[in-house]
Image 1 (cartoon, helix red, strand yellow):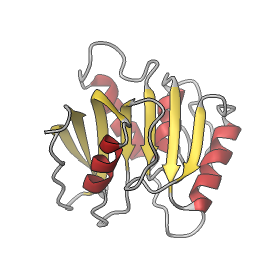
Image 2: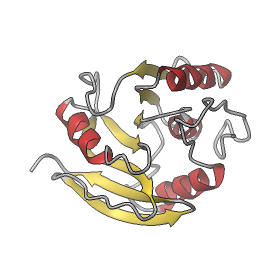
Image 3: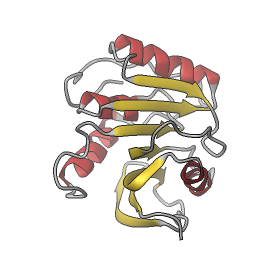
Image 4: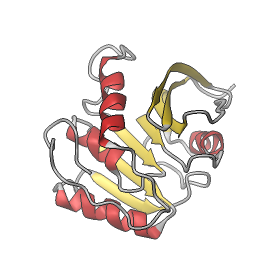
Length: 188
């Protein structure tokens, strides 16, 4: 697995061992980041200086990809201690520890955010149904900036309805998954 774009393009990333983590493929990440970069979701660069949360982060590939493309600060969150250890290893390999925080927490029961994020990635296990609950919990703990972009990855045929306060901007099937790009508009 490698970073697919930005200043760390081509750098290798470690992946957690076993079957508990399903890393988003390089091809799917490339498609997602192209969609975000060229989707006209904001005036200007969606990554430049962004505060990013990568929940259900696994290896941290999505958050670290955003950092490679100009994000200012990244938080990597996963409740699997082996995944967080690998995410921390990857931040260290990229010499990004000054701009990345890793912690072992459940995204459906997160701690209070220090600052809200403008870009949020949620990639729970396919079929888990955790994305909606995580969005609601993250909103409640201050993780979402007004008008934040949130990307939810589900299995390509998995049903997903965002909670109140979110609107779907775009959806795209890529490989075995489906990307849902949402805008956070505040609680209903």
